[in-house]
Image (cartoon, rainbow, N blue to C red; front, top):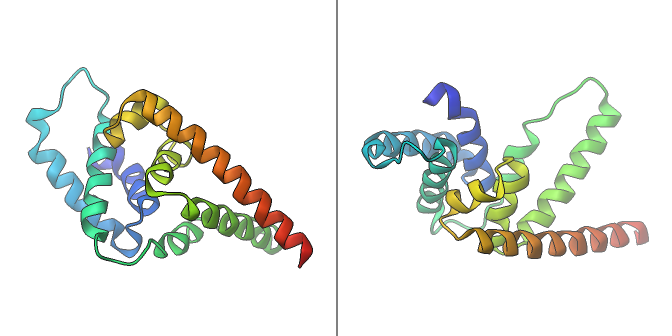
Length: 161
């Protein structure tokens, strides 16, 4: 279970805002998943169920902590390549995207994380977040519109500077 889903769970914890606590969140989520395995429906996909546990554990862990600033640092650690110019450009794009994602409301940010950063389907996203499919779809639509507007505004501001 850990070998197959550990990396996705760690990415999810980081994107949901666990920051430096991501490993602890994932470890606790796996313990909770193991303890609740008898309540898992065998016909349901396992990954969204686990991601939902990770999301809930992340919220529990970071409740009371300031906004998820550590998320950006965690995400930037994931990339390293041979061309410093390309790495700098990619890092700048990541910082811009992360700033735009962070500007979303939590509910919209969670949908963006599940759908596009973790690659879950619409149904898996709904399951992982414990919301109806229609809610996941509408939040995703609103979030993409806000991201487009935010990224356009950031680009215009950058061009003026």
